[in-house]
Image (cartoon, rainbow, N blue to C red; front, side, top):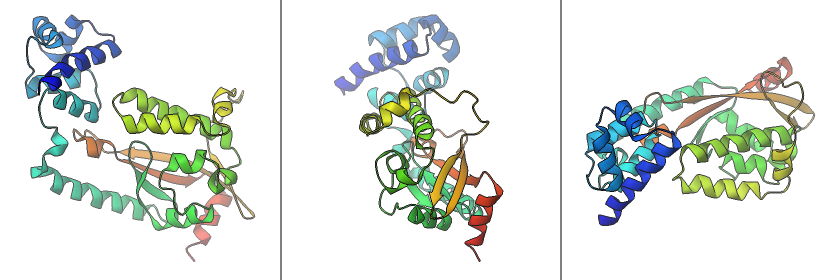
Length: 261
């Protein structure tokens, strides 16, 4: 417990520095006194759950980082509370199933914060099989690491640059997420990735970056839309992303529609 209480002041100061707020700025944003902020950062005072909630909101911290702040102060995180979360998560999972099924015959899947697939609709499973991925559940690994999926993507370099930037943003957003940090380190060492990151973007960027697949004789162009659960204070729910792949041209739409007949 003493180690937890020692960690809290450091985490609080780190997040305040990340947001470039003075103690007075944070006090005003959180509705606390500057003196109380000072005492929290020096360890002279211990925070209450309510104070941590106010600080997390004022610092615009992701739910998982607020959990880390709570645990560092000796509290249990909300995601550990099973009295209400089981029912809520069941309802959320049912809603995710509804969205995935409703997106047929186009691919859709739910992923966690590092793009590991949690669920996929039938169209996604079939499409993944078409492009050679039947075992790798992490989308970023499947796309970026050498293999059949990477080989099927005609414009692999710009998409890799974009995806790596997204992962870098996730690591920056959640500095205590060791899994995301490890994945970033793993992927940046893959062949061709550093070249992709250092390559200059195209001079006249298109409105939406599509992923162009070569599947047999077909040239498929897809773009993605990502949905999240709004206003979630639970880290497990906050992590969920629903990614839907949509045809960027008529030929791609026709290819997917033909597969349901």
